[in-house]
Length: 135
Image (cartoon, rainbow, N blue to C red; front, side, top):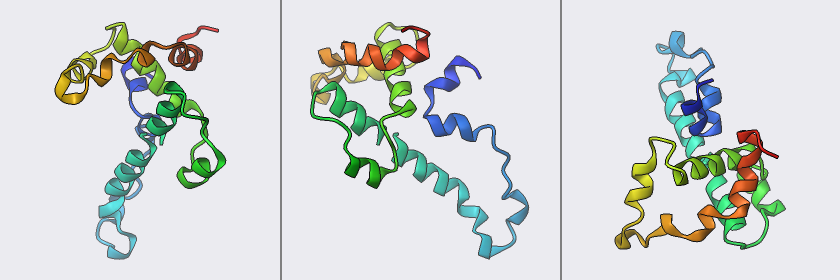
């Protein structure tokens, strides 16, 4: 898998390998094949990638991802959050094409959120380290 694909949400990277089995069912209205892409897009938004909430809690020292959050989102503190941390680290080092997003959020209009020190914290580095081959 290409490095840029790893910057996508975890499910997005997995779904790109899956054959679209609904293409032959487009004429059958009971199978709702027309809606499948919308459903998967919605699920991807939920993943956001729950992961952003979990990562924010960890980085801002607002407690751990608890069992209730895990139950309602269906996500544990796992790989999804690690990929986000890796992407944040890459953006901070300017080694990705997504630096435009960081620059956008340096404006005072957007509360300079991309400049907070927590985005360069040890927590982010530790989360990303397994994906970067560090220990």
